[in-house]
Figure 1 (tube, rainbow, N blue to C red):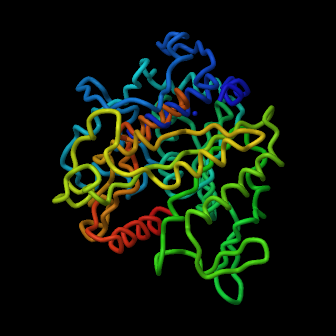
Figure 2 (figure 1 turned 90 degrees about the vertical axis):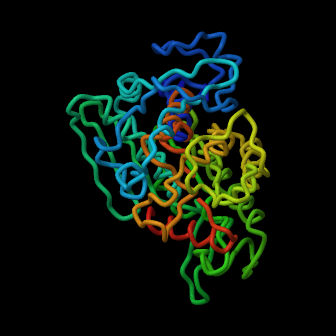
Amino acid sequence: MAALLGFLGYYHCLAAVLLSLAIVLVHGDIHSSFNMGYEVKRNEVKSCDFFQGSWVFDDSFNPLYDSSSCPFIGGGFDCQKNGRPDRNYLKYRWQPNDCALPRFNGIDFLEKYTNKKILFVGDSLSNNMWRSLICMLHSAIPNPNYTFASRGLLSTFSLPDYGVSVNWLKNGFLVDMAYEKIGKVLKLDSISTGQLWLGADVLIFNSYHWWTHSGRFQSWDYFQYGNKTVKEMDHMEAYKIAMTTWANWVDTNIDPSKTRVLFQGVAAVHFNAKEWGEPSDKGCIKQTEPLKGSTYPGPPVPGEAILKTVLSKMTKPAYLLDITLLTQLRKDGHPSIYARAGPKLIDCSHWCLAEFSIQLQLKKGKIHFKYLNNQNINKCSMLSWRAKERSSYSEDQKHE
């Protein structure tokens, strides 16, 4: 991260993540010093892990933008517009255990990234984060001069007065998906579209959500690696192989002195209320407050350990936006039945926007990603695994 922010001078559950992202992007590694107007003491920053903490209710806290004033949110993430009746979920801020989290300053961020290009590459959770960040930047400038466009898999947002562009490229697996005679083949050891990632000053990757799909909800027919093509294999083993392929691509193709690489960690879903001791509840439906404390009572997310292992072996390390815990605690941050489609679609994997700002704050502080703060922890309940898959699959189709 120090390298990341050092280069760019250097990005509500999302707000916390985004804030960490911003801190990293604006100030560098969380453990590096930064003096950009954030009210955080240098000695605190050196010893602080922004990703370990708890959600604290603060009635004076306001999101970094209002969903009604941001034109980029998208129907499925605008929970207030879609009828969510409560608003207290917008009043929680992420509090690290050992320091204060600085509030995102959009102007500082833009000045730091003047004439720079930031590219998000990933699935709909990456899109969730990207939209929250551009809303934060849009709200930071009075009457902003901006451009916004979507063409094919690429969505772009730019602020010409600063020369800053923040873009999102849809790519849920990062490795290749080929359409062959036998069907759709997920090639775990092949990346042929990496040239689309080159030229960015900051790359923020994400991949996990799609790997959990199975049965008729998965978007591939076969796995291929080496000289083997198989109909089925352990999905987490496939994920490990694919992420290793991605890591090797970064090590081979990225110059750390020119491009900072971050990986948006594994965000939690909240379909099974038994995990937090409320077996009679239907996942994230009607959840109005986060879990208390700094630990999640449920099982670990399988992909979290895999991703950390892969990243630890890179020769040109990517900075991990370690958002798993802060998203696990935000069972109240999802669109739930307020994802525009009504009760027939229950979304307990993405995050309500305006709330996602906290992650952005983290990503920006650490880089300013409010993945947790409400701008939703953006990642509610199905009584069965099959129902859970249906909801997750439907959400991907809607948002991606």
